[in-house]
Amino acid sequence: MKLKLNVDDLSEDFFEDARLLGIVAPIKNYQFCWQLNRLFQFNFRINNDIEIQLTKKQRKYFFGVYEYQEPTSSLVHYLYNNQFEGEYLLPEFRHLDFLWLLKGDVVNDESLHELMNLIKTINSVQLVTELTNEKIKHKTHLVF
Image (cartoon, rainbow, N blue to C red; front, top):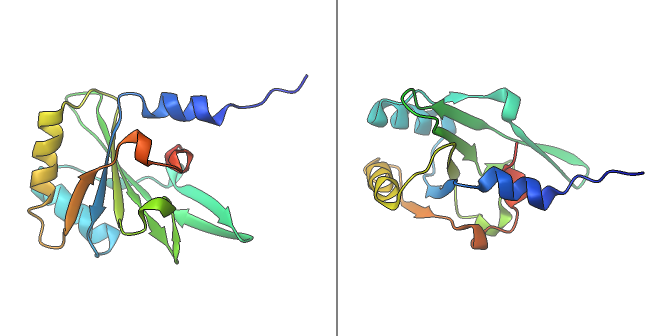
């Protein structure tokens, strides 16, 4: 008997109660995290254990993931690089530089819009938008 992992179910579970933002900010990831940490009093840190690795055209691509666990709740913030050496984590969103996933606790619309408006105050940020599940074709690329 062969067992097959159902990636769609895994993906649905992973994104349950999650919110995802797309951000256009043409700066280095560490500079962006530094600005976010300063603005929000967060402590985003790179987590090499959950780095996303994709293989395309017999080449490996690595997408860094920064992580911040809120001390007063079960909410975790993940900041993904959407681009590595000309390849995209979510090719359907080539214009986005970063993907911000909020997961582990419910984030209401008001809190999300407040967060989006604060992110927009950073000089290098050109766009912040919510990405809904229906729009994301390569959802499994975000699962770690």
